[in-house]
Length: 331
Image 1 (tube, one colour):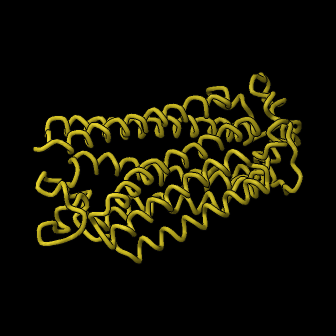
Image 2 (spheres, rainbow, N blue to C red):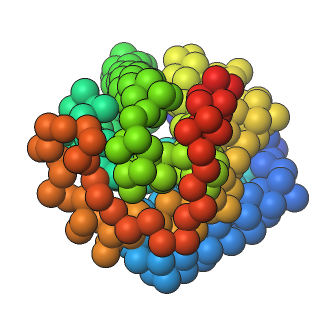
């Protein structure tokens, strides 16, 4: 904000709402809507994770939803006072951090899917999905934090150090852009895995057809779960691309001040993945991700024969037929 508004704490003739970073009063109804839905997703996801023993997924993803809840609470505070410093910090920090935790849950699902269906279909050892992509996401987040710190230091100076401010913005953009690259690489590896698996299970031998991992692959619940994860991934990817464009123009640019665009490309693009991950929770649709079942598959990461991979519990599944699986792979 301009140095003349550095001491503003509420809207007045000298401190108009147009001079804030967002330039508007955040819509109260829209933000309460997001607060309520994210809070429900948090409670449900954590509860199911504890109940069905999908501990890591439940805790990590519900933490992301909790941060989204806090972020929109910050926007509610800014509805009443657009100059609210606590509200702005909640909005900025929580809404930037939350998708990283949600992505961690998505990375975790591919690790367990690869272990269960067949490690040999994966280009990398399944456990590396979380070892590579989560730390890199955290690194991207740290870059964004460093950029934010540089921006804050530049803004505290009178007059504002525009050169340092631009440097901070560039660091933030670099962090978000690398996050997009990280998601894109993960998406390509996921696609490669599923293409390999589909080819393997399209015309299976009798032995493969009767295996436990084949029965999971052909099951309707598994296909629904994978479709939900894929759609959730797409939403998060779109959101990250939007964030790159939003920050490219610096603080207070026209994209950042477009409230409708924010709700469509930030709000909705994270909320619908949150609802998918909540409704189609792995505890219900992919119980092999549970801690007790995971122990049965953890030793298969270095297996070499696809017909000997991931012998897991299949209780509760109603396997389809190979023909049904082939039909689904063509859609």
